[in-house]
Image (cartoon, rainbow, N blue to C red; front, side, top):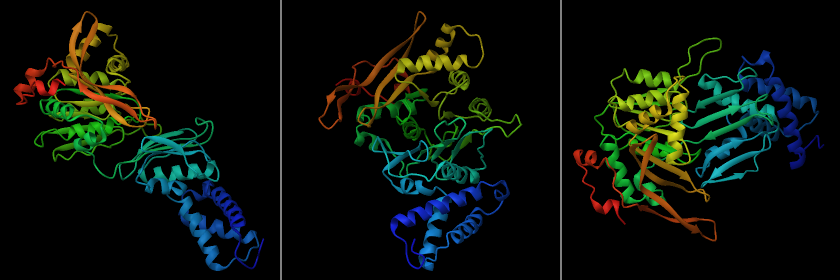
Length: 424
């Protein structure tokens, strides 16, 4: 090394790696976990630097220290991705595997952590201000950042290849129906139809896969709810941005260590029924709360909105059926399907296509029951016609020509859509 002058880029990189490793080791000590982490880092860096016997120019040494402190505090190496407006999701699959989603495409980045300890340090920096913790006994955590972004973190021994972080970034700009029309996610006729359905207080379930845009669409559809109505929203991590004034936002919370004080979605749905809501909006049903949601829809809480993981409207029926059975009641399949058929008016299928684009691929009415089966009618659908040379999915959003049986409810609410909406 060059003890009297600045270091080469390669030697500076090696020095940083050594200093970071030493600082992380000190930070992980139980004795230092209650102290100011920035002060602990600087003291550790000073000791580690002294052991190298280097005599760098003071400006270079100070810059190296500042960069390391910034990297170990906050989001560290992930900060550039979080600052990039084109990045919608950040995925860490271990210290050397950091991926980002841009424009619907997931790509590996050149960002890397020094080791697993640095990843865990970033996780702790993220969740500690939120009152959450992660440990060997509780190796997974869900949290919401102050800007609304969703964070999931999981560490060994559950995460075999190293600690993992998934951050679903919160959009800076709130999208609306005109944006979805411009993106080609739905047509103007579909938008007019959906607006009428929400205002006419139909019960709507948005179904789709992970990352298909269900929450974004739920947020947009909720904007059609009249401003004078009382809305109660229920989410695992609050993401909805309702503009109405009369909104009560509820968010789940895990149980404290050794206590039975968890507030899950099911408990919040039951509580919401006592809050005199005009509308109940559940971010996602993924458990036994599906039964409570269906019962609410069937007992006067019209106009409720929610999402569910499913790859088609028909799959969404099966998914809801499975979730209802998780409530532990020994209900016959036919009875469960009758509950679904009488509660849900419309399924909105949101899909992420092979080119990364997101579209509403089906607007499907629940028409009733025939025997033991729920009958469904596609009112609008996306027909794929091919793929362009650059991989873009080609197709058309079109009406099927069929009118929903709930047309009378739309007309009673003042929406006379007519043949022009339902025919091509």
